[in-house]
Length: 149
Picture 1 (cartoon, one colour):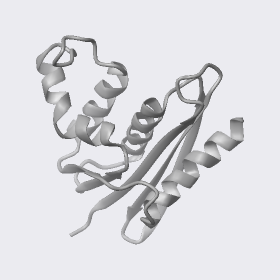
Picture 2 (cartoon, rainbow, N blue to C red; picture 1 turned 45 degrees about the horizontal axis):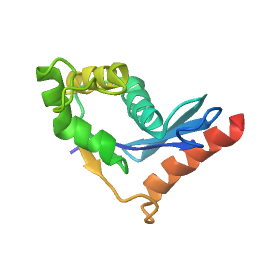
Picture 3 (cartoon, one colour; picture 1 turned 135 degrees about the vertical axis):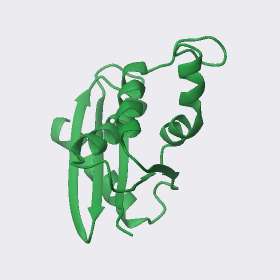
């Protein structure tokens, strides 16, 4: 069966500090062909970069009819998309403790894009563990950070 495989990663040098740099990287594969995307931002967080990678990957897709498998080393993104988001939406974008969901606009956009796909799954992979496409997504995120450092 045809399937779009996506590996994405995001990171931030100096996370939680002023004047930091962040980057994200994406590797998409379909029918033996690969496409790579990456980007960067200043004054951001690693979570924002992880979400931006996932959003950018889905925005780059030209179809909604082919199954999509996401592989991400971010528990934040995987747990969010595989469960937390449903509660946040039910609770008016508030966490179980009643606080506003951080990065709500990004979560909203990611959920919106994922909902357009007929078949999408999010899988957690262990980072920096020799998974070739995950390592490549990490390298792209680092390249993006190097370009604005």
